[in-house]
Image (tube, helix red, strand yellow):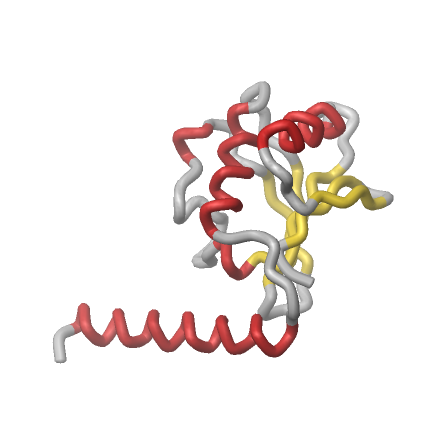
Length: 130
């Protein structure tokens, strides 16, 4: 078996484990990879600013902090910060920030598509799963 085949098998098993975790923990999926890409491209194209985000992946309890991409052309199927795929995102929150008008961003996103966005005390959360 070639190295490429071994890597493809490992990746396939990794995706199967992820699908198993998602099926076990959640009953509703709101976002697909395509919807996440659409959302993050819309964020990047809005005023070409970077927004502070927190996010949680389905496979761990840790909440991580990062920033959204500032340029739309940098958002693709592999944009996400670590070796993660969008399917792994349980939720992503745009944090309230005095430097960026997050409310205007949310209005912009709501005009583009019906994303599962809820307001929280600290910002606006996009749900991947519940």
